[in-house]
View 1 (cartoon, helix red, strand yellow):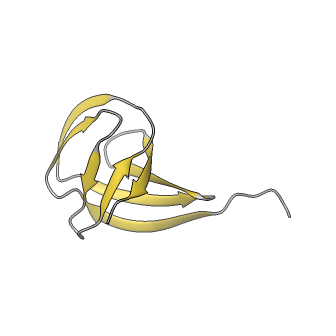
View 2 (tube, rainbow, N blue to C red; view 1 turned 135 degrees about the vertical axis):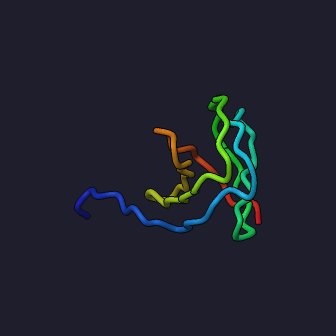
Length: 79
């Protein structure tokens, strides 16, 4: 094994509504019908209208990237 971690873009969509930030348990409903829930505590207040969302698989975990921020959040798919 070469020690590299695989990175894969899983989903590219938009938030189905406005983003007012996250609080540690925030669920993100995407325009494509997927729902992803934050699974690690992070807190941020902001306001974005229908931002682009990307879900990345990095190794065995999933991360949500919100366009217009410099953060990725650990998430789990709900449905």
